Amino acid sequence: MLTLIATNYALKWILFEKYVSSYAPVLRSVETNPGHEILCLAENQIREYFSGIRKAFDVPIAIEGTLFQKSVWELLLKIPYGQTVSYGEIAGRLGDRKKARPVGGAVGLNPAPIIIPCHRVIGQDGSLTGF
Image (tube, rainbow, N blue to C red; front, side):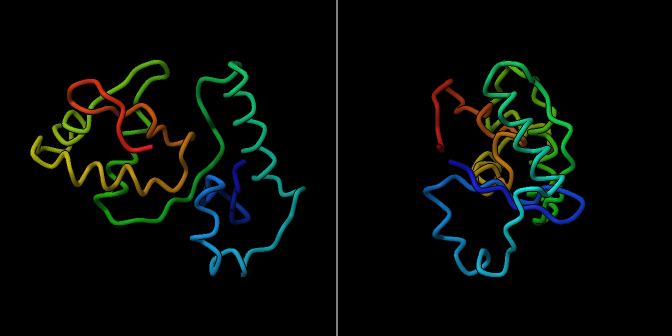
C-alpha cells in the first residue's frame, strides 16, 4: 500500500506502508481527501504503470530537498523506462564519479518513488541495492 501526499498543485510524497509510521508527525497535519485532483491523477497513473499501460508520468510533483538531492532526482527522471544506470554513472553525470555514495543517499531519500524512478538505479556490478 502507498500513501500519497499532495499540495493543491502537485504531488509531494509517496510513502511505502512500512515507512508511514516514520512520518506520523507530518501526517497528523495532513487532511484526507480521496477526491483531491492531484491525488486521483497520481493514483491513476501509478495503477496504469503497474498494469503495464503507462511508461512515463506527467503528474506534477513538488519535491523538496537540497540542491544536490534535487539534481540527483532530476537525473533519475531522465532514466528511460526499461533501462538502468549505476550510482557511479549518475555521479559522473553530476561531474564526479567518486560521489556515488552521496548519490545513493539522495536516491534513498527520494520523496516520490515510482514516479521518480529510483528503482532504475543499480550497483556498479549490476546488483540491486537499496530497496
